[in-house]
Length: 300
Image 1 (spheres, helix red, strand yellow):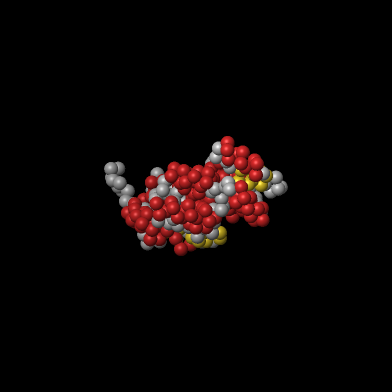
Image 2: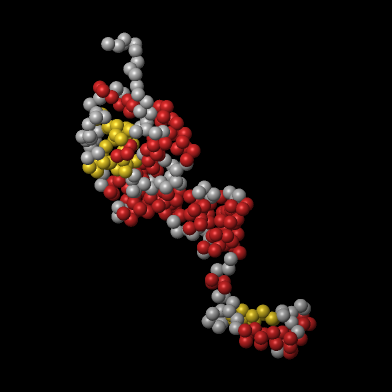
């Protein structure tokens, strides 16, 4: 017997699980005994880490090693506070749905068992749950979010509107993320690695052509430009770059330019020629005063 004031002794791994359930493991009917292999879907159990396969649909590819080490120290001291979620594949065989950071950190902490919530999920549900769990809890970088959105659209046959309803994000937000995947690979890598922000990338999209976009990326990195500065640069580039319409407005064949130069020499004045793609145009003859005007008229 124990004194009513005595606190029950807790084992390191069990502390987090007990704090969730609010009861001692031996008193809970929802926790499967560590000795049995009959794990049931819908239950919470402690299972051997080696029985858990990686999630092939995991959208996150980059993990902060320092943050994982810090989490491992916390788990070693406090236990796993929140169970990871797995699906049952067969007897003593599971596949991770969500909680990869906790699983990795638990392995770093040399844990042999980890608390899990066991559920059923098909591949589409696996991808969707892994994505949503990561977006809302793990702070995916913008490129990982964009790739995950695209995978949901492609593999789950969703429209952007359907995806918006499914994950609780606005359609414009989804469109902005997906737009990142249309940028050159170098820019996507810069966003992924944190060299530029998503705001920078969206500003870069304002200029057309990979070459110009990569040049802008180089300027951002070399000069540590903020988003407003990049937006100003993009406006300047648009204002100074002639449009195709402007470029086609004055199309003068070399033979015609040569004849105009001969006429300039004969009249001893500047002559401008304008000609569009259809051959229609104007000649502008320059004069400095009335006397020169009379001279030019008489010559013509």
